[in-house]
Image (cartoon, rainbow, N blue to C red; front, side, top):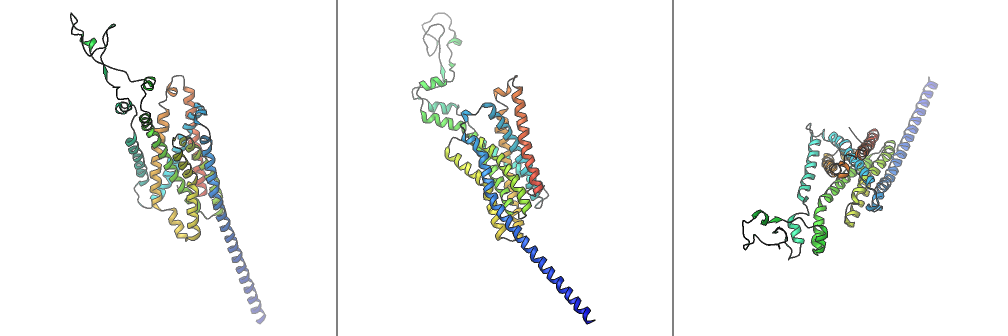
Length: 377
């Protein structure tokens, strides 16, 4: 009996030692995986920033005048498809899922509509034409007036009304005031118009386009910061590895679209600021998420991922993207004379295919994000 008890004690001791070694090995493996995940997320901060910059570079490095018009039309159509997918396939479902925990009301769709209205209201505030008569009159020299001109028939000199010395019936229709045509660019140049006022008029005309570009930039920036935050908070190594690859493609496509749009900004300062913000959007979000992940608790990680404030901001940014994409890219391209021409069916076909390719590419990226756990649909 004593020997049997001794054997049992020895076996239990061996089992305890084995369990302790297994726990230590598991802890070491978990610690190594955690450290590997942290290292990968640090690398992702630089990888996503670099891929975004690579997407921005082509259209910012080449002068717009050197880019063929056909290529511009193709890129605009592909950009429209990409940004539309970004708003409807990426932003809306993810934000809707987060807001379901707050209220059963479809708040995400409502906030998206509010974002559309905000963009619409801003464009209404800035939408004015530089061909307005007030602007043109202000640009003219003091001795030049816009308005009706009195003309006489045949070779008679210009007068202010019917000739009182003429005999016979008076042709009041022929002597009535007639509106002069708008001054052509050549005549305007010859009249030595005020250069500063003309530049102000041109800036007024470009204002709606500038507002549209900045609206798209704002929408993409907010979305990129949010997905960067999700990347930084993700602690699983395998999921993070897949997510880095998917987001790199995501940021390259987004950068390509924004690079073309930002090339339309006249101010070099505004262009530089927009490029910097776009490049740092995902890295900034990933850095914030990584800090919370390292120094915060698991509960704080989950709270940061699912906070309703992030979903609300995402929905508003999605509305900005949706409105500006459909009005300033799709809407303007469909009004071009070279697109509306009866024999331009090939160009319209290319535009349609480009739109579909851009939309499919960004939607495919969403599938990868859903697989990696970045999207909760």
